[in-house]
Length: 78
Image: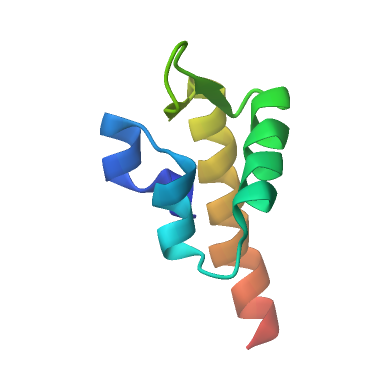
């Protein structure tokens, strides 16, 4: 949900930006998360920088995941 924020879609994101919202994540854990997202094609790194952008495929995956969570999982827990 954090990487789907509009500010990151426009300006890109760095590990420190994401960790600001997820305080219990260490820098090394954030690195591993970014690597996993890159390998799955959800984000891509801008060459020569520490910035990442969400790919078109990533936007679809995030939207589908949030939809499933909001329409299926949360009502099932209520």
